[in-house]
Image (cartoon, rainbow, N blue to C red; front, top):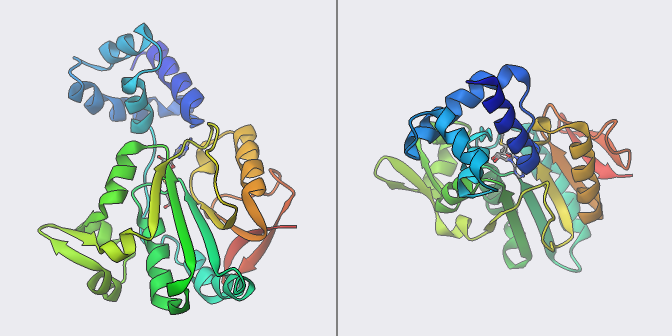
Length: 270
Ligand SMILES: C[S@@+](CC[C@H](N)C(=O)[O-])C[C@H]1O[C@@H](n2cnc3c(N)ncnc32)[C@H](O)[C@@H]1O
């Protein structure tokens, strides 16, 4: 891919999503944009980029940004955060919220939905007492494509095999030909909505639990700081934040303190 075209694309992607594409990501950009260019009726990437340069932000620019997101995810990813939620964090929060009987959970950058669905199944499986509580799980992502898939609740066998225990598959999914669809009772627990973390956020409830896992890793330091600062303002004073295994608030936001729970790091406001 031509260096100038690469630089144009990476600057556009950075300004629209905060995703940083280093010099050596030329091959990645090329491999993601080649099929998109063809699908959109262009001869190749050069022609696609010429079109992008010719006008302001358009749906085509949005498709290019989405093509550059990494949507890697799985059910019960990393296991330990879900163990921490099941054994410690949720029991603690539930006992503190018995007066209001309200819980608000936000799964930011939720990709194709495995993370919020894992959470919803965990609540159904282990916290029957929440049945008559006001519990809301908000799941957001920049990409409309992944949100569409998440809302459908349909997963192929490979996605199912990645982390979903067989008893949960049998209990919470219906077979639909080659795919499995998660039951309506679980789907209705989650509100999937578009949200770009670097744009202004809509009014949201104060959160008891925020999961923003495996997305800050793609951003520069200032963007991480800004996003953590906004999350901090959105969290209840005793709320809990989960980040990805390679992420941390250390040197980014001192208002958060890190503790180990069930061999995973959780972050609380100091
Ligand atoms: C690697 S996935 C993480 C999925 C899930 N949280 C997990 O840990 O398994 C990263 C997600 O972040 C989303 N993303 C990237 N930049 C974003 C932004 N600026 N605002 C919101 N979501 C973004 C991508 O679309 C992608 O679905």
